[in-house]
Length: 165
Image (tube, rainbow, N blue to C red; front, side, top):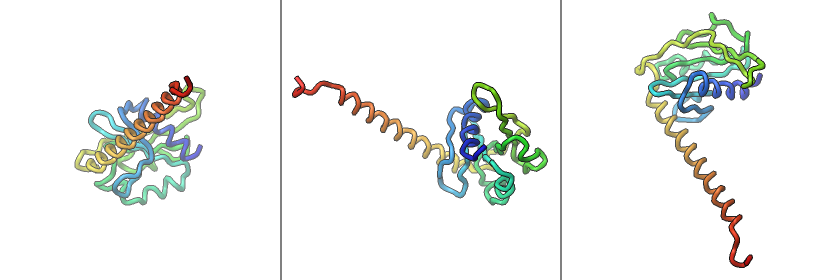
């Protein structure tokens, strides 16, 4: 399974199993951290980092923003293919989600192998998350406006013109 496929699974997990009201993927924001997937519910946020290879998982733990006080996510998870890492290898402060191929109608199955502990608001970068959420909302709004313009142009193209009689 590729990194991009895991990211799509993470987004689906955030929207369905984690029941986030709003979620996005790999959005550049202010600061060093670009989460693979992040979602929000009423009062908290969940970050999912996707690791398709063991080397990527091990190198990710060396990033200074992963376990610092200014990390994104009130809850933080790694999503990996089945059997890539063990629960014992997951750093403190992180949970583990394991992707498993299945015949499920969604085409994926995610098993929570380790719960992520809650990080108090003062321990995660709440202001950066708000900026991230605003940036995603603006891009979403712009996309809707663009789609609206295309729909208007399509409707206008279907209207009869005076010269067509």
